Each structure stands twice: as C-alpha cells, then as structure tokens.
Image 1: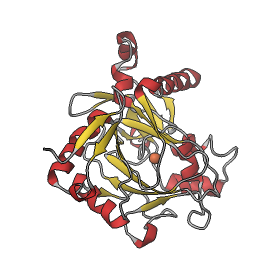
Image 2: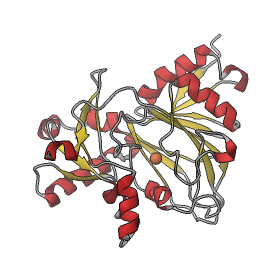
Image 3: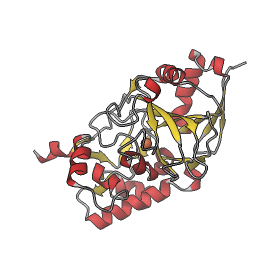
Length: 293
Ligand SMILES: [Fe+2]
C-alpha cells in the first residue's frame, strides 16, 4: 500500500496529503507531492508539526532551496538559515509593509528578475484568534475556463509589474526613503499576461503587483486586471485554508495566487516559510528597463 494518499479538496484546486511524519521524507512521498503540486495547486498536510530543520529538509526533498528574503526582518527565524518568519509582530518585523501587502492577491517574486519561485511552504506556528486564513486561487484553472474569445483577446498582452503597485493599497502615501528602499529590492518587470509553461499549460500572471497593461490605456488595462483577478478568485478556482497549529501547506507559486485574510498585528500570528527556487523563466518576461534602453 502506498505511504501517501492525496485527496482532492475541490475539482480545480486543493489537496489534502495523508502521510505519516516518518514517511514524509521518503522519495516516494516527495515524488507524489511534486507531481500533485501543479495539478492541485495547493497541498495541505494537516497537523504535521514540523520543526524548522524538518521543514527545510522536506523543502530540500521537493526542490532547490531558495531564499528571497535574506535581508528582510524575520529571516532566519529561530536561528535556522533560509526560514522566514511571516509575522506583523513589531519585535520581529520592523518593516511590516511587506507582510501587509500579502492581504492582497499576489504571486511571490514577480518583481524580481529571475525565475518565479516554484513553490512556497508554510507551517503555522501561532494562529491569530481572528483572521489569518490563507486563500489560494488557481491561475491555471482561471485561464483554462475563460471563454475562447477572451483567451484570444488577451493572448499577446504584456503586463507591467512593480512594487509600488503592491504598496498602493498598503499606504496612502509612501515616503521617498521607503520608495527608494523598495525599489532597491525589486525590479519593474514586464510579464506576458498569459504564461505558456514548458509543459504547454497556460496560466495567468496577475495580482497586486500588476500595475498596467502595456500599450493599453491605464483605466482599460487596470479594469481588465481587476476582472481577471475576480475571475480567478471565484470559489470554483480558489480555496481558503482555515489553519490549525502545526499545519503545513505547500503551493505552486507558478500556478496560484495567494493572500491572507487580515489579522491583528498584536495577535502573535507567526508562520514559518521556506521557498523552493524556480527552474523555469517565464517565456517572454524581461525587466522594463531593458526595453527602454
Ligand atoms: Fe506571498
């Protein structure tokens, strides 16, 4: 009998992984998880209660370790390199805007000039009494279910992604100093709206960093981006995870957007995150500045 069983949550998204902790690190489990990840988008391991070292070991079984927040407050949580503590607790995180930005639908790493992180893994260490659920929306399902004429209409569109767009809903006004810091840590990127993966499958690259559509009047482009985001977030294509302490979740960052339901900064909510580096550059992506030269 197989050591691992994956139970679908909804037809288009979500899977619960039934596996014992001792079988988690088997090659068979890693292979099953890698295979299910793209198909299910998000996989839940209820009450797995991994330590940081175990979570890193499991990340390493799934792929190559990435770390996109080496310098951010909250990195190296608990002294373990490459583990990032997601929290609004001011003792840990003195620049909370990065976490506040996660209240809005996004794909990690779209404003970095490198392959998008392949997958992200979170373990719930401490929950908020109110809020703090994480939602996932399949950008594969969203694309695949679009009407054919809409697929045709958006086929060749390019979208400009920038950190300022993601911070707009967080701050009424950002200081020049803050803007300079964020710009220094990111790149304005141009991505195709429709990503044709090496596998041949197509997904949408949308979310809070998506600022405008190239060569389309700003209000028209932003309206399209908002409508596509609403489409992708519909219940058929999305899943909200109600955390229990010790739950571990891994999602396909190349085929899902995610966001968190707001929670109080004094709630103590703390998630430990590890990241699996991407291995596929988005075909047709480039930094905006390389087009302006
Ligand atoms: Fe994120």
